[in-house]
Length: 191
Image 1 (spheres, rainbow, N blue to C red):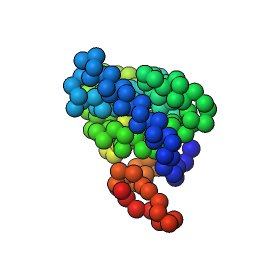
Image 2: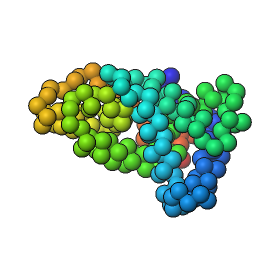
Image 3: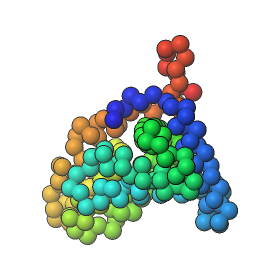
Image 4: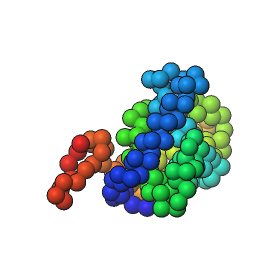
């Protein structure tokens, strides 16, 4: 999977409909306030992706892909929408590439979730096997410094294999400007 995935209108339509239905369901069931529904789904998405790398010694993007696919399947009404392999692959790629657009508070929620997890760490192994910490280390800048400081405070050294340098650099190099990138006459502009 590359970072150069083009925007897919059909996948967007499916994802948007699923998120809308599930946000509505959260509000209708009084699981959260209307203005927090998208944040709740973002948290659920983060936790699902983190679950896939929990217990592993290093983060790989395949874990995120599987977590994204599982998250989509967990959404109410998703089975009929992403039953075909083509739709499932397209929606998974679309959500991974544009997650900050579907979940505007993704970075903030991930950072707060990871800081909460990091504060509970009392042993090096718990840190290294924690999926949320690995996901944050692969997605956000300066997380590895926080991990090094936490491990040092516990009397341990840093494990460089937690997230490889090229994995972090690739993720941080993704374009972030604009909501979606659109193409008009073979030129790209931010929406």
